[in-house]
Image (cartoon, rainbow over all chains, first blue to last red; front, side, top):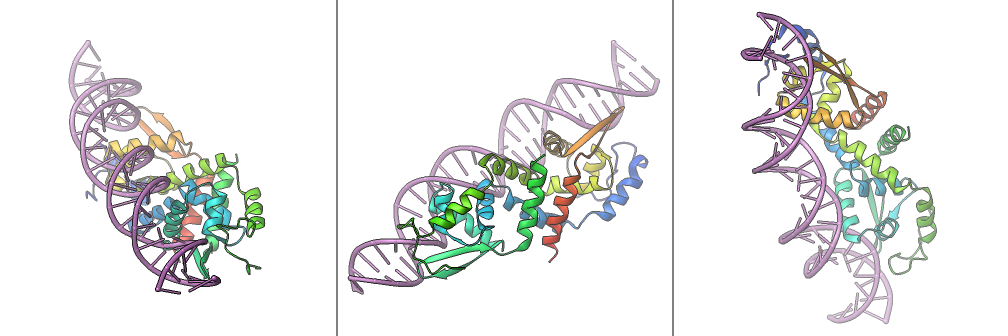
Length: 119
Length: 119
DNA sequence: TCAATATATGAACATTTATTCATATGTTAT
DNA sequence: ATAACATATGAATAAATGTTCATATATTGA
């Protein structure tokens, strides 16, 4: 890693001030990495559909699979991803497992994104 | 919630009501697909860093490359992605090309995500 | 116990995606 | 026109990711 690399290719002085200001305000790399991981979760239409479906309330795996015309296995795999990331939670009732949203932020993130789309 | 009901897989009638309600409220597939594409843009730490850097104002490609210790080529490729998606815009000044955010929504989407991370 | 049902999971496969390298394009100054 | 510089881009490579298939686990009821 070249931390003290010249800001601008051959004439460092030029944008040095702006670059240093930006550098000091950038979130730490670790945060950026986590944030990317979060957005990645929303970056798949299967997972998005699951999240949107769960906005209305809890649903079981079969409900979700039927709703979105996707294999039970595919839904299950994606639910695991969402579960591991603490975006959904679940409760068991006999053989059935009901999933629901675990985090209010999900709603606001979805809304912000959709607002942008609907322009 | 009145979930004192039987499993769904083999007896579709059971959660049928809930499923139908959800189905009627789901955004159209095309929207979901577009939304996934949007979030995918935020789902890479290189692109995230570019967007965060541009929050402070316009920067040229070399500024960005230097700032984030990444190849000029890599930055350029990602800038093209962001440009094609209308998240950044650019202006030319001689040999230098300055990039800046093209959309206010970028800020709010980033904020929402970061809020979630910082818990 | 065994069969049936709901869900989870591992492995394989196909697809997407980000980076690198080499080179091309476009701009300016000489 | 040529050299130098800033940026863009195509091809290749490697890594990550989503789905499918087959099978495993867990729960219930006979």
